[in-house]
Length: 222
Picture (cartoon, helix red, strand yellow):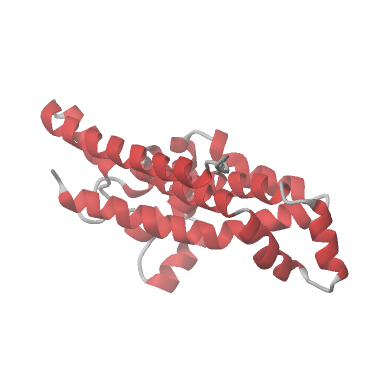
């Protein structure tokens, strides 16, 4: 077992999930509370990675973050190195690729909050920020859990974006999905079986966490 690849994958998934939760809560609230006609475009962009082939997204990010674009040159001047083929680049790609898996559950959860509660909060003088963190987040905590677990799982299973943007650099960009691909390509099915089993176990454990946390509780009858 390549423990280095496992540690890198868990680190990438954890960091990506944390960043996505910070970004997706205000974004989802904006999509629910906002009234601008441009929000449809914003929601479409946030959902685009869900339908865009991962290799296409990875290619666009590879070009955008490379030295041939103004964005890429700006990043190189700021960091001293390109984001492509680095762990930082993987984080950027993972956040963009997994964004819909964080936003969609939160949008559904926030939309399910009783509109009368939102109106009452506004009548009492609450601004949008207070409505989000004192009303939406507590009442939609199951959606928050679902968004976190789905983002984590989706990042663990990434392949196309990781391959295009990060390549296969041991200790830097080699994740479990890349490791599994290499093992199959080398006909090392025994090692591939172990890697696949770890990915399967992580997925099952995370899904159990989702359903345990989102399963409605039924009261006991005497």
